[in-house]
Picture (spheres, helix red, strand yellow):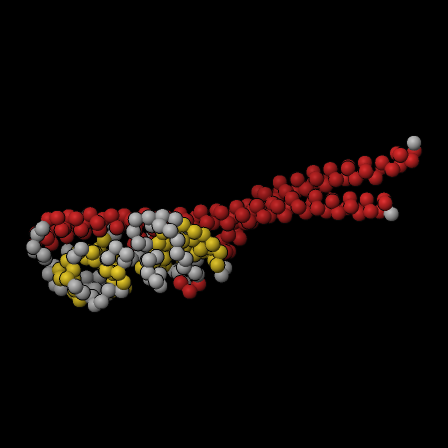
Length: 278
């Protein structure tokens, strides 16, 4: 009975020695795949944030240039400054003078006023924003951002024009300070498929949700955040790649441990015979 118990224990230890390294290898492959996918998703968000912050800097510089000139509103000298700001900006489509809910003049259409209606939201810094607005001077919906009497007309898709590794990766920008996380622009994102979470300025967060790997990155200096969403199938393909690296090492470790358990078990089982021989 003693030999049977020892033999059973040896088999059990042998099974553990074989399985444990392989399971550990699979877990390492899964963890590395998740870390890599999170890093890739974060790189998309950081690229979009860089573009958004660059746009914010260009708008701030434009406001200073226009207002510090103290030209008569919508005069030809002020329109000339607006055109200068427009041409020198990467993502700004047009610049105008805002008067209440109306663009009184702009760098493209001159002094032709354009009615906007009530703004969709007001950011924490007091900027008014109109989203998905159709204007005579644009062929597609635009975003209008107004602060300190100056209006900026933006193509919301430009900041999202970042290369991704597949068609099922979605990106969107949203206003983190708004109660309903108002979306600025989206490329393939289904907002109902993921949960928006509030995070600190200048921080980021990655989590799994409803079959997606979701990354949220929030700008440090402007009221905007980016959410990226990729199907977990991307991560599963990476798990297989990392498994090709980790599992062979796991098999080698399993073989080594199994050999060690076998040797130790034989020594243990032979000890009673040795004592009896004495």
